[in-house]
Length: 135
Image (cartoon, rainbow, N blue to C red; front, side, top):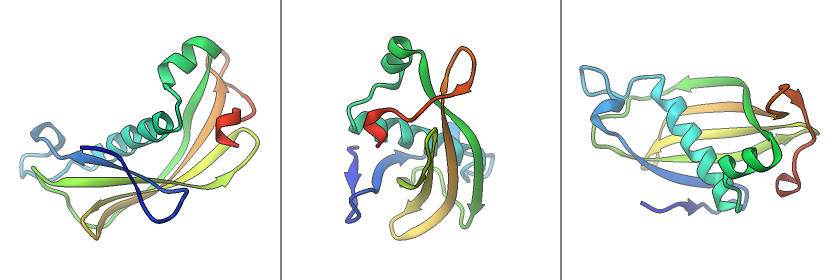
């Protein structure tokens, strides 16, 4: 599976296959796993910008933390589905960025969310200005 960019220049999409471990006893994606899919897509979004989050954190002592997450569950995903998870920045402040994320199966949205990421000094959790690659 390879990443895709959609027609909007700021949107990034990452494919995710639903595995057995992602589902409940009925073969439906367990609700908390949508957050995991979104996290994975954000990591790959940063990687597509040339940023390895682990290397960045080790080198600078800085990184992103989730400040808030607001999700809407629309339709279920199922075992074996190949989903696309999008990441689209919507609001950028000095030390944070808010992204809109959608998990979809084809043209059908399954889950949508607004995730606010704070950029911090990891030892102290104090806010830091967003790095150049985000501006």
